[in-house]
Length: 300
Image (cartoon, rainbow, N blue to C red; front, side):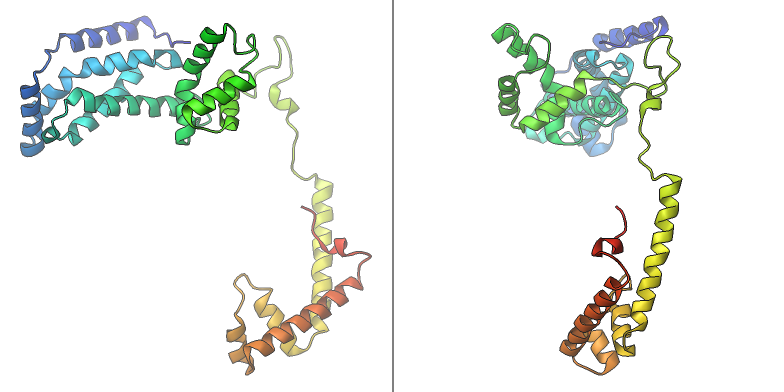
């Protein structure tokens, strides 16, 4: 649905559109001359004349995107930004008309604005999603016209329809399904009532996934118990074995076998053997304190 501006904004937009249409069209030679003056000499008057002549292109492009629910004036402003970017990068020596070059920048600026503002959640984060967002409605309409209701009588695309669109846009079928679902829904506040006259909001039905106070207390107690078991098991190791476990397993960045070998005056292989033996001792010591190995694991 198109965005409807207030009367004052509509008058301002109409005034801008009329002014854009009054700007004279540029000949190819004059257009290139203006571009060279700006590019080579930094002539701002040439830049302004070049840009003003093509604001009509901005207006025409904005009209194509007016059904995305965003203000026409904002689309025009974003398009003008794209037009200015095109003017700053245009190379007249390539013998391409400025309108052809600028059209890409204008359309890209408007599309980025639509994707940023169409929903609170960013919609087109990949090239495939961007292509789907701007082409899905058109392709759905084409399917409907060809098959006379090929979208499943208003219940969404059929499997064949999704596969056809995926082939046309060179994307996965799963991405077509996700975008179809995304476009069929709109942003809604969690503080809005579930029904007219209801005292309950949508957020009242959101489940709290955080641990309960009881689970937090139990987790803290279990953690202290496991820490105590580990300390007791470490106390049963020899000083050298305890050093290896502490340096290799109980530090965020464990020491290497070579580093410990130099510190203890033994080879890397000997450190590895001592570590293996110490881990076996720890395992046996810890298992004596529990009924099953699962008791040593913290709840996810």
